[in-house]
Image (cartoon, rainbow, N blue to C red; front, side):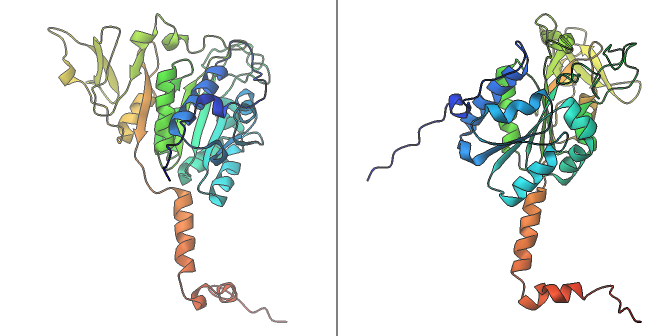
Length: 342
């Protein structure tokens, strides 16, 4: 008998039979395309994949992929995903959320799923607005953003999702842009390969309620000079002519943009990206145009044992002990117990 090689999966293998219903021109279409392409290249069979979402425009995602899926409660997708992964660690579990769903009502769940380091791929669509409920200010809206909930302009300081994830203890933090398909697919594949919680912020355009929110670094004319594509072990250089770079600021903590060229700085003078450095990742996560480029790619990757792996390892260790050591009645009557008299 001759073994035949498996037939490579194509992106259409992950496309469902449902009509995709987002606003025309929405960045979610590009993200859906990128995820389907990444899944095909990863090669995981559709029946081993689960998508879990909360509430919002992004939360429609499970309907549009031919995998298992759960459209759950506002902000609670990480909790459902945690239960799924603990029940069946062999599944590839992806969490789909938005800046409102994941960082406002769901901020507590996001914090703890990152802190615990569950082996999940968490994809956060960031359009800096509440799209489904018609354009209110979200946790990531810039100061001055005029919306129905902030008619005089937002005065709140926005959340930086990547910095939040780092502060919560996330071990894999990355960024991508919805329409930059090659980079998006590469980041999603890296996130999947990471064993633990992978947090990917995708800058997504809401053409109806917040069009051009990311234009300062995504517009065709601005992108070459306002995007810093980080790569482990490579200098932090950017610019249309690769004539700019980052160094540690001379006058205090932080980073500084310098020019490259004769009589100026050389690439050898620049900071080199180290994706295992949380200190550098925090600095990169807070850069904002126009003073700095937006850092894209894998900002931080430093794996440790995932929560689900530790839970199952602990259970296996308990199962290997003698029966007397795992007797439930003995456990209930051990430690601080009291007899209650009349």
